[in-house]
Image (cartoon, rainbow over all chains, first blue to last red; front, side):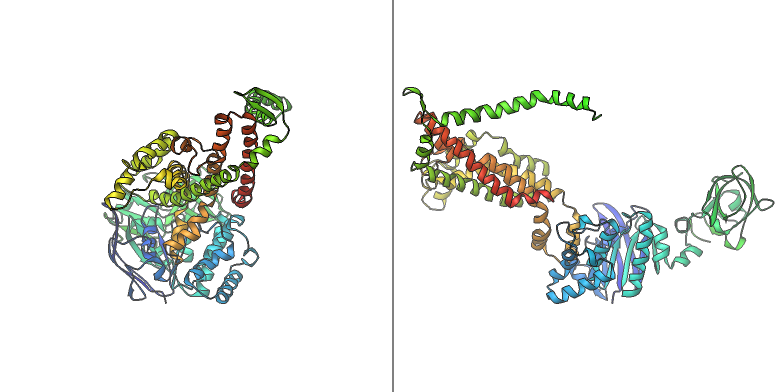
Amino acid sequence: MGRITLKKVQKSFGSTEVIPPLDLEINDGEFVVFVGPSGCGKSTLLRLIAGLEDTSGGTIEIDGVDATGLPPAKRSLAMVFQSYALYPHMSVRKNIAFPMKMAGLPKAEQEKRISQAAAALNLTDYLDRRPGQLSGGQRQRVAIGRAIVREPSAFLFDEPLSNLDAALRVGMRLEISELHKRLDTTMVYVTHDQVEAMTMADKIVVLQAGVIEQVGSPLDLYHTPRNKFVAGFIGSPRMNLIEGAEAAKHNVTTIGIRPEHIAVSGESGDWKGVVGVSEHLGSDTFFHVKIDGFAEPITVRAGGNVDLHYGDTIYLTPQADLIHKFDGGGLRV
Amino acid sequence: MATQQSRSAARMMMAPAVILLLAWMLVPLIMTVWFSFRKYLPLRGGDLGFVGFENYSRFISSSSFWPSVQTTLIIVGGVLLITIVFGVILALLLDQPMWGQGVVRILVIAPFFVMPTVSALVWKNMFMDPVNGIFAHLWKFFGAEPVQWLSQESLPSIVMIVSWQWLPFATLILLTAVQSLDSEQLEAAEMDGAPYLKRFWFIVLPHLSRAITIVLLIQTIFLLSIFAEIFVTTGGAFGTKTLTYLIFQRVLESQNVGLGSAGGVYAIILANIIAIFLMRIVGKNLDT
């Protein structure tokens, strides 16, 4: 079980309102990712759910029970922190055992769960080491192990991968996704990295300045962003947003077209431009194209072997049915 | 630039400081050892030549030697216990956000700036005086007989005075240690279901162990040689004669430099024994 319902939840620090009243439903077994630029209130929202911050208004229900006033320990949630927050003076074994020791579980049961968690997370050989003797990825796994053994109704992750290097991050991403499939427990995950959000989430919650901009599956958000912010935030490289005369042709303020939805040609097309910087990734090539009359260069994706270079003339044709249109308020038309 | 040349240049530059330090340490030490083997009575004939280990055996066989060692240990132990326990509590309290934090912190540190002689006199005359002291008034207010602090409860009184002086030092060091604790660790422990006291015991106290070790070592060094507090309050009477005070009495009151020097050598040995024990017990905390 792990259904979390936020009703009109609100948070202010002094007179500054960080999170205006907000409603959100997290279903049992879902992998929900809070994503947004830094300072958007996503970590605060997670801490509100965890009980590490008090709400300024509204109610938080966990499994249908009002948990707004409950202390963190009573919410049956486990949290993995950005800094891992391992206890440096305890061995890995004791770190993992700590929540069970606090709960007063019998020793035999503790040992059983520790060995299970260690086996699942490849930590068996490191159980007697101190956290200081482990690598970043191993520390991360210890933190996850400490969360798993409590058998919580939901896991909370606060930017758990941001301290890892890029290669390790991809690996841990997979591990966490696999863990979710295996445990089938609700997970709430906070990140500023939209790639993590897209790859891991069942449901993405896009936040900006404490306001939920859109909630939906990764592909929903990709195909039908509700507004300009979500359109620009989800997808990599980001969507080209074009204003001015070109947008006026579609009778809107702004049009958006993703780099992968533009056809590239050396001979003919709708827009004529000059190739600026090109990024060759092998599988794909990204061109930054300067077009007369456009305020910003357009990013386009082409195949890996397109023979165009800096300064060459390039023709671009957006796929008409994949153009996103936004009105003056930034909302999707 | 760690060439042979720069290294020898560095040695040359360092030499004056090293030599000065060595002289500073070695000359008094050697003089103490030298005098401890001589019969030297400044007012009764001056330097009367070598007497072998006579000073040593006389000092240790004196009826005031073992009580003075005991007094020294009680004062050091008592002050350490009080300053560390209350230092931890005060550090945790001062770490809480509160109105006027800066002023309060300065006030807490203030006793450390008061000279030992002055603070002992203040305590003696303003707090512990059996007629006019604040404590006497307090006792009378509740209808109790005022305590003759410095004569009836002499040892606890001195422990109290010295603790008051050293509490700020312990608090200050422990406060910086408390502040360096990662708040996410405490939050993690909170999520893990540890109530406040368990968080203190399992997370905060282990984190403070290194700072406590430092407080313990530094305070011990200084507390073994406290003098002014005893000199201006009891003058060594009522069982407050520490080893340091006994040496002072031998040298200045009995005018026996040789005997006092022998006591000085004993004091060095005692300090080293305590230091070795302390390093054994708590020194391993400094390694990790």
